[in-house]
Length: 492
Ligand SMILES: Cc1cc2nc3c(=O)[nH]c(=O)nc-3n(C[C@H](O)[C@H](O)[C@H](O)COP(=O)(O)OP(=O)(O)OC[C@H]3O[C@@H](n4cnc5c(N)ncnc54)[C@H](O)[C@@H]3O)c2cc1C
Image (cartoon, rainbow, N blue to C red; front, side):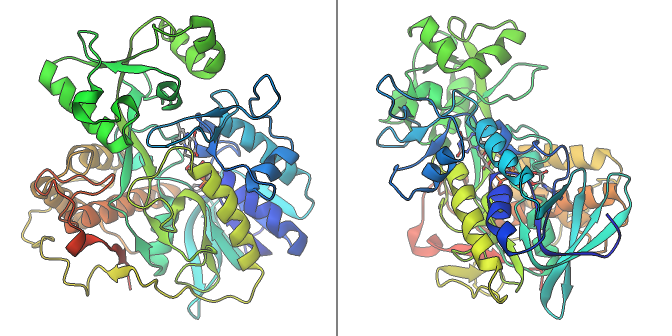
């Protein structure tokens, strides 16, 4: 790729949202897709449980099936539907326990066959190029670390989630929230960043990765038990093991504190052959660690999993900057409220990837602010915000800076939050704030991560109530009178 190359459309990200958008854009012009690691390395590729859909004739999921996606079927040939927490009915299409890999396979196959779409991997987008108030493309670092500019009539951020902002996460290394940072530094509105979903059941074993143990297991009857083997969830919520994710995550920590021991998932009461056949990926992963999914108790605990907030968009993926779009986990459409339901984000990526592709072919215009949004600075909602009298937190701009930010966020802005911890995080991250143009890949990575962390911590400090994924020990109740709003921030 030459410096200053030009395309009709540039898409940052090759997960479900970016790829679906590329398919929609290909008939309209030349499309460039950038991915910062290997092409298939994305949250999409790791999705396990499935994709929620009411399967109608014109449904996006039907489109995916027509393109060749192989979802599991029952003996009568109809799709076999799973159930996950807080869902009232079985609605989750799945391909074993590796649904995202199957969806990614189908989309990549289709995109690879499109002559209009070019992809570059190991290309780290670092800035949105803004000219005369309009997005004009992106600046990225190529595989060799050299800066490159690519110009485009419309630019789509499809960079996925931000789980890596926290020490413990189910997300792969690429999920550092870059699109949120890029949009914010370009002057776009970002919203709802206090709403981070912590998944209750990531594998919790010293030295092992925080591998997700899908909620679909509990949908099939798996139980959470304490160290004495006693099921405990009904003591915390009437829906028991299938209570909403935030409730289960906090209950696991509380049960662990109460008993002084670990919490486990058990499937030992279910048919072993069925368990191994229904969840082959998870079973194989655990087998490598010496655990038998069908027999052994699996130690689990919460980990950062999904970002409900993101770049503020309208229902077509337009952001507040003309020519800049966002779709998938990086976007905040408002669809997931304060607490996403399982299996709705692959679907969101498909739907909003397609919608953004359609809008990107229209004359560019900025999305107006929605009526249910309020600005963070002008709303009078900052009463509990920073008071500016903190000592600077000593985090150096060395490679360890990223580790320090992740530790800080886990400790101060994680599952249980309070004012003191959040003030500590905000002060530390304010000291790292950096609006300069990143000159190297390392600087770009650090700037992205600390920007997103800072935005999350500030938003969490500001919201003095508990709602969905955001839980304040010092404000444990929901406060609809003051806080039934989406709070928006912008650098401008
Ligand atoms: C373990 C796990 C299990 C899950 N299970 C489910 C499930 O069962 N059902 C469900 O609906 N959802 C599930 N989710 C959530 C879902 O997978 C994601 O929300 C969804 O896949 C996000 O898709 P996306 O296209 O927005 O982003 P991603 O799939 O994350 O893709 C992001 C892309 O952006 C690229 N990128 C990022 N930053 C840059 C940059 N600076 N420059 C260039 N490229 C960049 C990455 O390389 C990648 O290609 C799960 C998530 C995880 C982590």
